[in-house]
Image 1 (cartoon, rainbow, N blue to C red):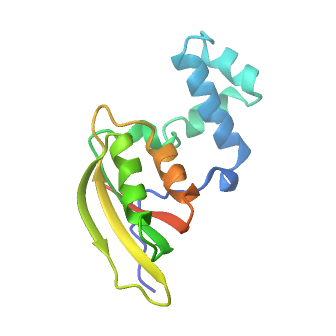
Image 2 (cartoon, rainbow, N blue to C red; image 1 turned 60 degrees about the vertical axis):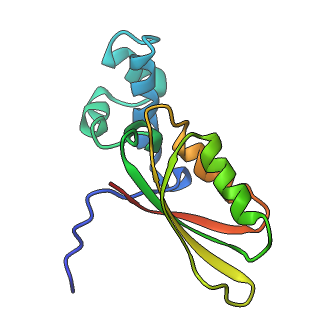
Image 3 (tube, one colour; image 1 turned 120 degrees about the horizontal axis):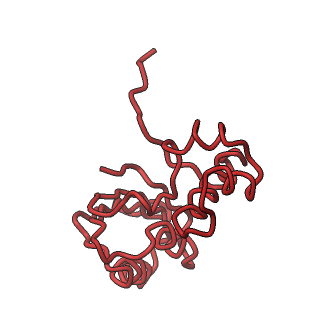
Length: 148
């Protein structure tokens, strides 16, 4: 069996253990100065201080660490006029820069699009951009492949 060399994984929020989500909440309290100490932030979100320190460098919202990076994702969508245009419009609205785009030849009315975008300093919340694309009529799913 080949060794998996993945360092990072993209996981939907519902699959993340509650303690890790609480670490993110504690970090937000500290960053916003709504909590002054780690102990105060940990107490407010309901975790131990040791849990905070154990995981603080290992979890962060996806969009927090994407500025200046390239994000590549795959979109499976119906082969209907206007869907690709709407999708690219969303990317433009979030001020992400399209680097590459490849659409497969549709099979049974379904096309697969691979899109790489550069996340600029003024790009909006990338997680929300992906959610908006996924919510478009005719889009079956969006999967993030890589973040470089």
